[in-house]
Amino acid sequence: MINTNDILETIRMIQDECLDIRTTTMGISLLSCADSDIDKACAKIYDKICTKAEKLVETGEQIEKEYGIPIINKRVSVTPISILAGISGGDPVKYALALEKAARTIGVNFIGGYSALVQKGFAAGDMELIQSIPQALAQTEHICSSVNIGSTKAGINLDAVKIMGQKVKEAAELTKDNNCIAAGKLVVFCNAPEDNPFMAGAFHGVSEPDCVINVGVSGPGVVRSAVSKHPDYSINEIAELIKKTAFKVTRMGQLVGVESSRRLGVPFGIVDLSLAPTPAVGDSVAHILEEIGLEQCGAAGTTACLAMLNDAVKKGGVMASSSVGGLSGAFIPVSEDAGMIEAAKSGSLTIEKLEAMTAVCSVGLDMIVIPGDTTPEVISGIIADEAAIGMVNGKTTAVRVIPAIGKDIGDELEFGGLLGSGPVMKVNTKSPAQFINRGGKIPAPLHSLKN
Image 1 (tube, rainbow, N blue to C red):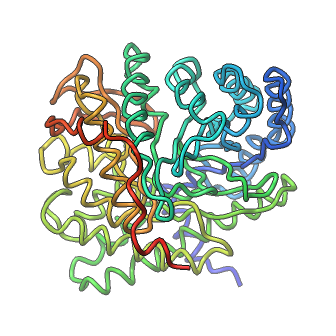
Image 2: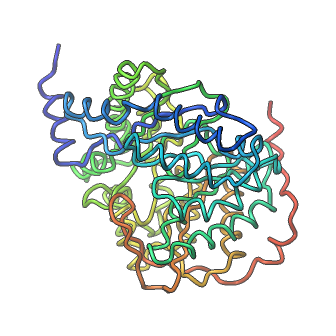
């Protein structure tokens, strides 16, 4: 029986509480496109993406209209391009340009997968792709890049950490006249998942099917609204409330995923449970934490509140979907979250506090604007610290920082759209150069031997 109250509640969540499906992401394997001739490989890539994802955007728009559920982004993720570059040789930027052409043809927001997985070392094509990342991102609009430099099983590739600090800085410098946006499309991972539907870190893992649909949900505004109605609840009652709310949000994601799969004729993969904020008022993870009882995000107790939130979201969401995956938790991207922006501007939220928060949430230091004169070695040090948190705790962590070339603390970068705007945050400038330049590999922790 259809429950009228449930229908009205869903309508209210969509209209008043910023509920949406953040993305439907089609993962496409490009292994069949590999060729010793890079130009032939690029042609195959373009043809396969345009064939498989030809109706992705159209189908998403149809589901939006029929069900009244906003689907904000339609995206594609592909096999890490370094694998194909290792077979073909040549300039990997050609692959980025082929992906950009495909993105424009099918009308998606982003294609992710200009990526390399180098946690245990560099295979053929890895170094060439990594060196090309700044140019590839500067020359394209819709392409995202990621590099996995560590894992709980493999340890941390410190040589890769060093290089990625340099590449983040180069990417920002090449796009300094466009708000350093290339750095905003580049993320450095530890324990990167193969089925993540969110950008900039999405890629289609080699263990995935040839083609699959993954869904990323949202819903911070819905959770915040629910919590705000119960100021006298104990913390365990708040946790139960968040679990029930996450269940409702995830059911919507499950519906969209299954329906997209049916209409497109490809398997349904996973729902990523992550609470993904936006700059819109009321759609903020930081504001959830403040409703729980913090004066402002960043105050003492922030990490504890976030840990509870993240756990409750997972417990509620996992019962609402046939398959949960990706990152699944609570995102804390500074520039994309109105409450985080406010807290950073006031000084309540610092990079050090954000680092502590990443130990208990999804991903890591995300969309953080740092001074333009930050050295590559300091960026590498930030990457190494986050990777260590992920490696030791067996969780995904990542770094997406944006050196604001020509700007300093107190200035701001304005990206627009979902990327929002970011205040330039203070960074500890003491140099880790000697540590970073040692190279080699940080060994995996003892619990990596669990089998």
